[in-house]
Length: 88
Image 1 (tube, rainbow, N blue to C red):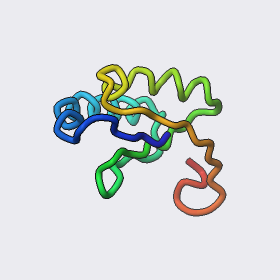
Image 2: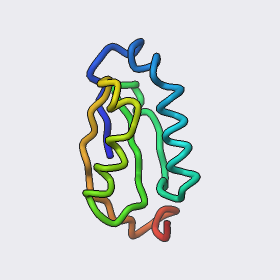
Image 3: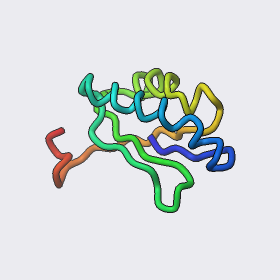
Image 4: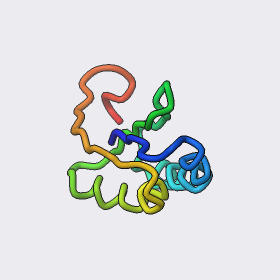
């Protein structure tokens, strides 16, 4: 999932603590392979460990960035065949 901030960064950062708690919950449930903010900070990337688009969309709908209306996500399918995420 690739996010794009749709409001000024200050508004995004006002929700960041809740967003990071959400990301941590994904990791604790074994649903997250990697996550991070883009550089420059115009959005972020979440690599989810799910098998279908519908599940990814259901999960991301719960992200505080989405519920607060500060970011929009674009789902991007990805099959790792090399590197550290290959067997994730």
